Amino acid sequence: MIARNHYIDPIRPFFESDLIKVITGIRRCGKSVILSQIAGEFQAQGKPVLSVNFEKLEYSSEITDAQKLEAYVRERIPQTEKLYVFLDEVQLVKDWHIACRSLRLENVSLFITGSNSKLLSREFTKELSGRYVAFCVRPFVFREIQEYVEQLGKTYSVSEYLVYGGFPKIFELPDKDAVMLYLNDLNQTIVVNDIMSRYRIRKEELFRRLVNYVLVSNARVFSANSVQHYLSSEKLPCSVNTVMKYLSFLEEAYVIRKVPQYSTRARRELAFFAKIYDEDVAFNSIRQKNGRFDLTHNLENIVYNELVYMGYEVAVFTKDNQEIDFLARKNGKEYLVQVAYSVAEEKAYDREFALFNALDQSRKKILITNDDIDFSTSTVEHIPLRRFLEMDDLDG
Image 1 (tube, helix red, strand yellow):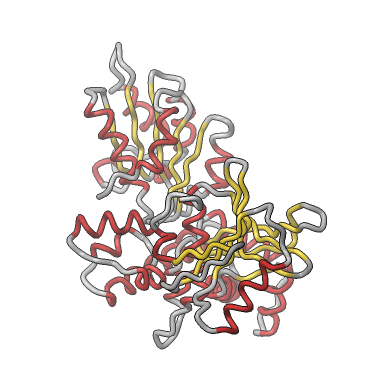
Image 2 (tube, rainbow, N blue to C red):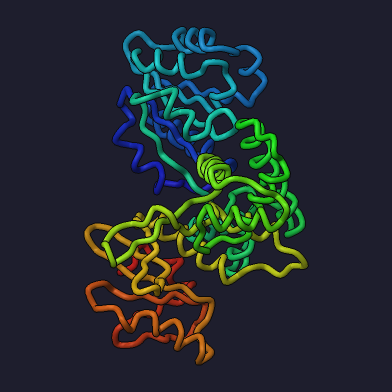
C-alpha cells in the first residue's frame, strides 16, 4: 500500500497532543491503513505502540465496554514513556467515548477511526466535544491510483477513473465484474447498514429512491424543493424537511458533499441552492443501466474531488444567471474553473468559452476538458484532464 502522506502530514503536529486524533471518512477509503502507517512511524522510532482493531474477534470478544477498554490500555502504559494508542473501529465498544475521554488524561496519545452506523460525523462531535481533532480521508485521487497500481503491476486509465473511481480495494480485484460487485456491496452496506439502521429510517422505499436520484444526478444544482417535487412525481410524497434531513444523513456518512453557490450580486454564498457531488463517482456508475456511464458529470465530479485534494475551497460561481462550475480559492488566490467533456465541436467550444467572456480578468480562467488538443486563448487556459490530474495546484 502507498504511503498517504497527504493525509498523515496534517496529523503530525498533533502526534504528542492529548487531543484525541479522529481519522474519519467513508467506508473503505483507507483509514485503517493510515492508522497503521502512523503506528509504524512510532514503532520505527522505538516508541511503545498499542494497536487494537475491534473487527478482530480476539479484541471484540474481550474488550466489550468502556471500563474494559480503559483497563486494557492502562495496564500497558509504561511508567516513564508515553504510550501511542491506535483504536480501529472503536465504535464497536459500548460507551467507547467515555474510555477515550478518560484515557486522553493519561500519558497516552490516542488515535481512533470509525465511520459506520455508530460513528458518523455528528456522533464523535457530540461524544468527544472539544477533546478531539478530526481528519477526513477520502478515496484515492488519480496520482495515488497510479502509484498504487504500479506497485501491483497493473494499469488504470483516466477513462476507468471516470467510471470506477478510487476506492482502494478495487485495484486488487481481478476484473471489472468483481469491481462492480464490490462497489454494489459497499453501496448496500453504507446505505442500509450505516444510514438506514443508524437513523432508524422507516420509509425505506422513499429513502432508497432519494439516494438513487441524488447519487445518479451528481454535479447538478439541487434544492430541497426540487428533490421533493421529483419524489412526489414518483408517487412518493414527502416534506421538504424530510428531504433536507435525508440529505444531511448522506453528508454525515461521507457519501455526498454539497457545494454552495457563490453569487456576485451580493458577494455572498447562497444557502438555498447547492451542487451535490458524490464522494466517489462509482456511486453514479453502479446506478447506470446497460453500461451507459455518465462520463460528462463524472468528469466534473472528478475535477471537484481533485480540487478538494489540492486544498482548494470550492464554490459554484454565478453571475447574471450564468454559472461557472467552480470558484476555487487557496492562499489568497481565486480561479474560475469550467469543466466540459469536450469542446472539439464548434457549438460546445462557443458555449463554454462564452461563459468566460462577460467576466473580468481579476481571476485566472481555466477550462478543463478531456481533449488532448490545446484550446487555450489569450484569456482562458485550457488544461487537458490528464495533465490536470497530475498537477499539484492550478498554477502547476
